[in-house]
Image (cartoon, rainbow, N blue to C red; front, side, top):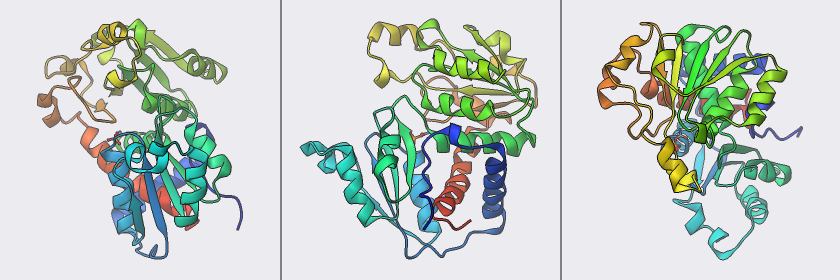
Length: 305
Ligand code: CP
């Protein structure tokens, strides 16, 4: 049987694996995909809302010929609402499905699930913790555009304090050579010290800045994020962070013509709709890349490659 292949956090991946994953994802997107997962069932257990992650995983599984079990809202429509523990839910669901894709509001929930699950757990976001499959598709998008990750300069903008996508992406980027990271956030939503210490240990260059416009011309990618009102405990801090950064047709002209704009989505106001038609806007393509990366990940955890 061998070891169960869980996907819990970005630190578990190394560049050789990521390169293999990208080759697989490219192949699936270019050559089509096998439809041989008919005997496999994936359950999606989402305790928090999602559009892209849940539906791209479900679409990937359907396209691969597999079957999908899902609940519209696990917080309300699973026995979580009756007080069942996460561990008990995983013990039960892992008998009904061959793979569990889970989004939860608590940091570390996916790790707890993986510790007891006999079938693969894929972390689809654990509170303000991590979102490793998003980070892999983000990195895939960068790689598709630039043909490399080494040497890229990336600005991460917005909710860096509670943003699981930026945390996971930072861990992945830190594995490559000469990457430079600009953390653009107001004081109340800066990147946590644990990540900065991790970057220092790996000798990755990073800088905290509060103003967006001065760095627009210095980076290859501006990775915007939404200020997540739902994660702030103090409304005053949310208000201090909100509406501070916005990309529009005016300021994106400060970017290099080859630089790109990414966003894990959903966006609220931080990218004006007029930017969507600019060739630098990559966020819809980025979301589309999620299908290929998640298809490749499903095949991987089910040991098809
Ligand atoms: N990027 C992302 O996780 O989007 P959803 O919340 O819609 O899944």
